[in-house]
Length: 57
Image (cartoon, rainbow, N blue to C red; front, side, top):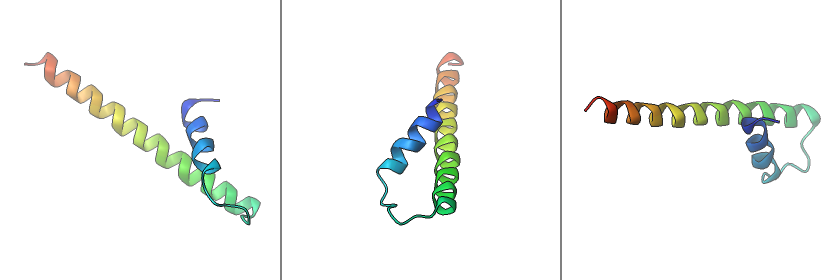
């Protein structure tokens, strides 16, 4: 299991989904997975940009 999968499962475990159908749950998983993946990429990209700014001073 990778970081995005683990965070997605953690996020979904905190959601109120007792009546979700398998399709609804799969849709929620895919939505959360893509959102978390994007957030991590943006966070890492921001960190890289910050590091580059410091190097080029």
